Image (cartoon, rainbow, N blue to C red):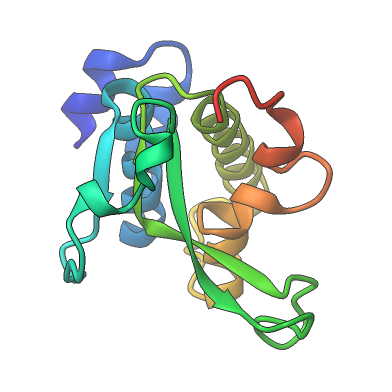
Length: 158
């Protein structure tokens, strides 16, 4: 994993990536790197396909869809988990993206900021809470607040 990131990303990203001790944070971050750089379909090893990838996109959008994500939880305006301001949670363990998609560029930038802040604030302490992981590298990074990835993309990469 470290060699992949070092070989394909510059600046402070490789050093930050190799400094991550928490396996969940590192795996989340790696999936975003791979899809940003290579594109394709990501599915965690513990998922099972109930439909083929070809069925994910309606025929009218074949050749036009650049990012496909599903909804994991929809709590109909109720909190996903206690204290969360979100009622809908997107999959981030199974999704499809074209290389260089703007949403993934924004996401990687956001995760870099989150991890750098974590490193500064909790030197060498691991995040072990579900909420901490979700906010640092997990699904919340896709849509949290006005700097969520879907707020920053102009739709050109939809």
